[in-house]
Length: 102
Image (cartoon, rainbow, N blue to C red; front, side):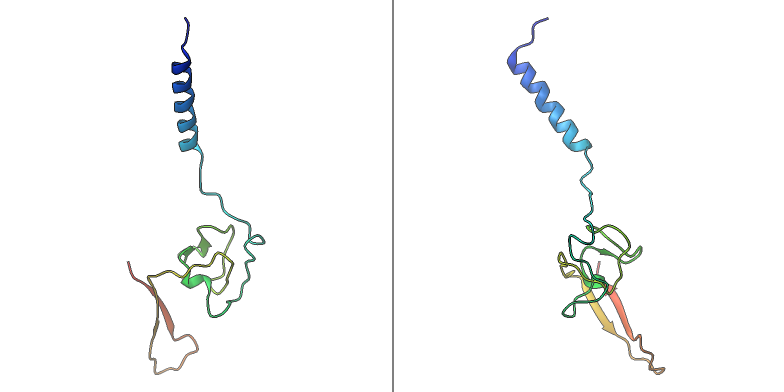
């Protein structure tokens, strides 16, 4: 059976698309590459970043466990992040509550 060049390139193109969709694109970056630090910088911290997942203390782009008060160079403020000040009669040191609009 003789295959034409057109059929060959059609097959190779389809094979390339299949391999592209089968490859996971969720690789995470090492902390040292993004200069991760466990302290905030200029008032910005991971808890207000759009990449931070508060339920698991993880980041969508940086590998490993992330401190909510940390910071790295790929920090990008979540537009839905709002910090709400709660008035409390007990005057505890943790009067701030984080709220994310959905």
